Amino acid sequence: MNYRRTSIEKEIVEVSEVGHTNIKRELAVEAPVALVYNGLSYAVMMVTPHDLENFAIGFSITEGIVSFRGDILDIDIVNVEAGIIARIEI
Image 1 (cartoon, rainbow, N blue to C red):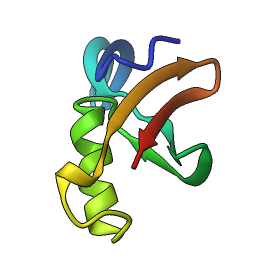
Image 2: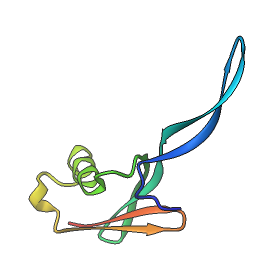
Image 3: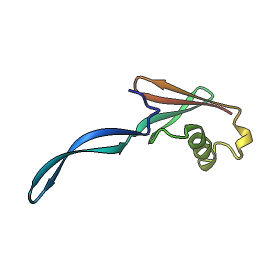
Image 4: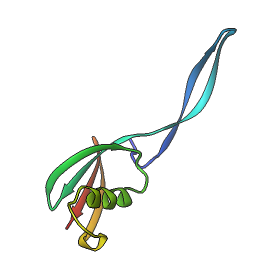
């Protein structure tokens, strides 16, 4: 699966008092993102895979792993079969 997509179109059945209708809807995609700091796994979060670099920065600061954006040396986002790995070098 391409975990970089943020939505997917699906056909669903809309049910009402007078019957049912097949319709297409855009649905949000969530993917597991493993946050790995200097090679050590820290957490896995379910997120919409959009702006993952900014998510990793905000998560790192909020969790107190780093104090400032400048404390993060590199972020590498990697798609794997089971989801996404955010490799963060601090």
